[in-house]
Length: 107
Image (cartoon, rainbow, N blue to C red; front, side, top):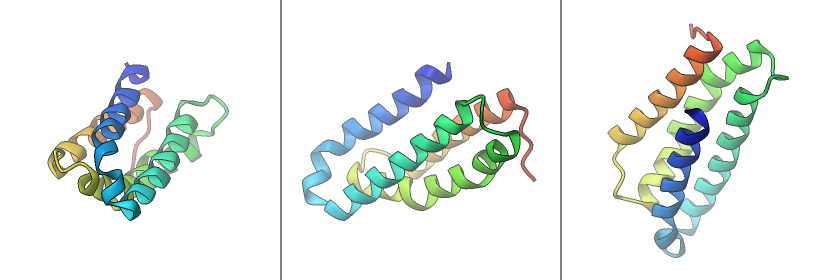
């Protein structure tokens, strides 16, 4: 499921943003940087060589903070078709998946 869900969310986000890139170069850069960092976080969450402690740090703090502070605001500028509520729901879905499958409990 995660192999389909996460790439699908990112491809929708990227496709929706392409038209707006030329008009919002700062948002484009912010989005691309944040998207790359989130991709790194997801790779670490999927990796068997990442410790549970690091996965917990990513799932509970790093990923949601990056998503809310950089990824989501840039995406909302680049693609006004999205709503904050919709994007927060997508974040919750992804985080719930990882927390459940990795047995992560956030404090």
